Figure 1 (cartoon, rainbow, N blue to C red):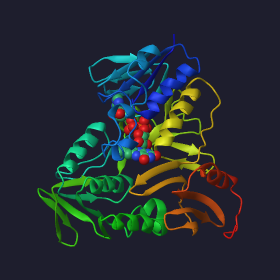
Figure 2: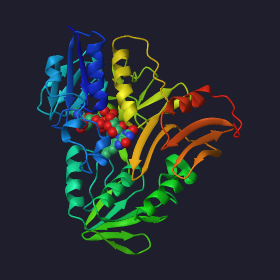
Figure 3: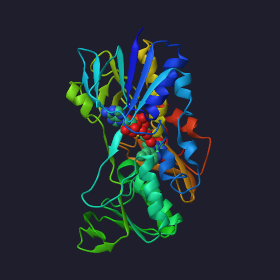
Figure 4: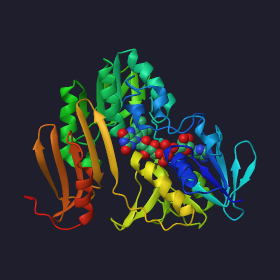
Length: 379
Ligand SMILES: Cc1cc2nc3c(=O)[nH]c(=O)nc-3n(C[C@H](O)[C@H](O)[C@H](O)COP(=O)(O)OP(=O)(O)OC[C@H]3O[C@@H](n4cnc5c(N)ncnc54)[C@H](O)[C@@H]3O)c2cc1C
């Protein structure tokens, strides 16, 4: 009987295990996760769950009994410490080894940290610690105006904290959205009482505050570092798999070893639409990439070419983003105030789109991106 081992029991790993069974695989499926919790989704950790609006049970990918029902051997609190590619074996932190016929790596990413006492937000425990911290009120300083920083800022404000966000770029989300749309997020946060310090870097997290590059000290009861995440590639690199920014795969999510696959945040996969490799750190990529890798492991012909997709909710701004803005030379906005669609164009072609408080348009936006044809801005 064949054994398929999945390393990393997050969304991508759990969805891959589900797909293996749905596609009729009757061999052994082993899903190994370093965390003690069964697989769960992370988006609520910085939104509804952090704000105390959604229940803990709702974050999990499957109910507890599901794994046994599906004969999936879920090993929680177990870390894979090594992969022997030639021997087709993984080493576990309890000193044992396990053989596999095919291996899927879905080890995700870990938050970048800063020296000093700053909270990070990746796990359910992190979210619970932050929720307790916000509930105590007081002054919160958030370092980084990316997705996690801004969502944490919104949650902290809604909990009644005084919130300052420090960001070295000239607008929030500058690298992903550019200045035009970054400005929209700045406006929303300022309108809700967030003190946004842009173009300023945090030099040091001190015991009772943050020292800025300008020399100013921001007193804080709680500091959050929202300074990005790094893919968990060490296991793959040490095993000798090809690694760039993430674990390199082809469009079928196969790594440089034919029996090893990678999906989710950790994978840097060839994307036929863009003609280059992309590493996408978003929920939809774990949700769909895990199953695509599972089908590929089963020998099915897979071309994973979904348009990157992301969503966020901050105060009264709900939005969905599709595509990749890299290299854009024009932004066209249709709509007004906080109800609009923004399109990013490169040489007259739509490469990304974002709908803000406008719904059921993602398929249309993605069709425009996929078509690749020129589109006069007035259209
Ligand atoms: C707070 C937060 C909010 C987010 N909000 C959004 C959002 O609104 N929209 C959106 O599109 N995306 C959002 N994301 C991103 C999204 O959650 C991730 O893209 C998604 O979780 C990636 O899933 P994954 O399965 O690839 O990795 P992960 O969820 O990181 O899971 C990987 C798992 O592998 C385990 N692991 C790592 N190494 C080993 C090892 N050696 N052995 C065993 N286990 C190991 C890890 O402990 C982890 O449990 C958010 C992320 C966070 C942290």
